[in-house]
Image (spheres, rainbow, N blue to C red):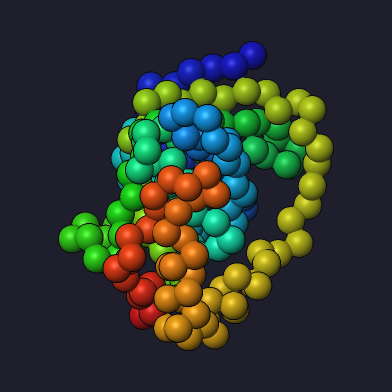
Length: 190
């Protein structure tokens, strides 16, 4: 049976910390495509407070989440256990995009233990609803390891390659505005 929570307490934070993957869902205000993206690297998600979370948005194949957040702010994050302890946790909220040239960006980075090349932005979410579900039908999987491919790719990328990504990520697949033409290149890991 689903249960609703008033805040991200210690048990919910522990569950979030145990998950190696999370999923992000957004949609445009009118028409267009719903976006559902898997996100990896455990150290790219942070609980900022009882009703606030954030994650590192790394350059990838598209920019739907950013475009949808700029359009309406609606976002849902889902964590799903694949271990013997079945559970699904959804965080429904209002998200915003914090770019590398925004004043609060450096402070937000301190919430993330890992260092990743290719950070496009930090997505900050004010959580409005926290609810879990049983997950009884979700299969068991065993984690082998995190996939290092994206970090390796971004670690070798040149400034020209990132400039091309920024240009390609100016609009969503539905034509919604996403990155600015002058979006900064990602910071290099310290």
